[in-house]
Length: 211
Image (cartoon, rainbow, N blue to C red; front, side, top):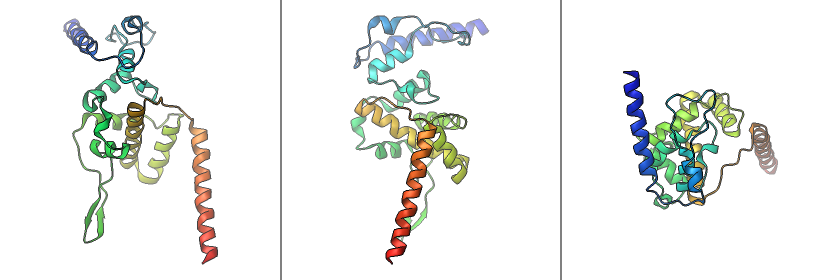
C-alpha cells in the first residue's frame, strides 16, 4: 500500500509539472534551471518532487517567495493557486489582506465600535499564512520578533492573525511590485521598535508640556 501511494503521489506531481509548464515565464529562468533534477540532501523526503518547483514559481511570479521565513515552495504554490497572479484585483495590500479575512472586524452600531473580531473564512491561502505564522516563535528574523511581541501583548490566536496579516501584505507587494523580500534581522527590527516607542513617548511628553 505504501508503494501504491508513492506511485499515486508521483503521478500527481507529474500532472502539476505539466500544468506549470503552461504558464507564461515572466522572469528569466532558463529551461535548464527549471527542468534540472533536485539535488538530494541527507534529510530530503523520500516523496520529494523530482523537479524544482521553486524555479517554476520564480519564472511565473518574477520573485522568490521562499525567501520569506519558514516558507516552502509547496506552500507558495498552494497560495498562488488561490490568489492567482493578477494583483491588480486589489487596490492595496490592505484590501488584499481584507479579502483573505486577515483584517480586524469593524462592527459599528450607532457610532460605537462593538467589536474587532476577525471574520471567519475558508480561504486556503489565509490558512497557509496562519500555519506559517505559528512556526515563527523561535525564528531569529524580523517577522519572528514581530510575532513574539504580538503574542506577548495579544495572546497566541491574535498574534497568529496579526502575523499572517503582515505576511499577506509582504506577499502582495512582492507579487505586484516584483520586489524581493529582504530580511533585516530581529536585532534591527527590535532597534527600530525601541526608537519608535521612544519617539512616541517624547511626542506625548512634548504635548503634555505644551498644555
